[in-house]
Image (cartoon, rainbow, N blue to C red; front, side, top):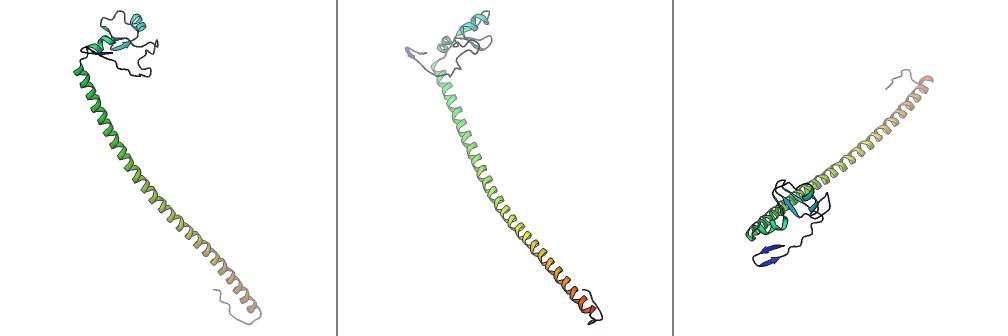
Length: 162
């Protein structure tokens, strides 16, 4: 609860357990200036009873002037806006980078497709070349066989091997 002149302003905030002592599970009620830490009732009794400068949190809150609160809120708001702008700039930069990476991936895919087509054409040419060699070898063998037959019959006197 914050006191503003004659008006009481109650601020309710869900702290999701952040307002509780992890040691005892109790809500923080004190602030120890000696150790600059928040304390629950049990912490105050067990660990901070010899500390000289312990105030209840509600006393600290009433010490803060409205102008200070406004200044703090404005500062927080400006910082939040800066963070949003910075985040927006980062998001834009990331989106731009993602776009350029996608273009590069598409270019690489196209290049890979071209290389696969060339590799297939080379493989086909190799197969055709192999088949042509085999055919040529068979024809050469057949010509040699024909030449031997003719030579053995005496129909030719010289034999030239190509």
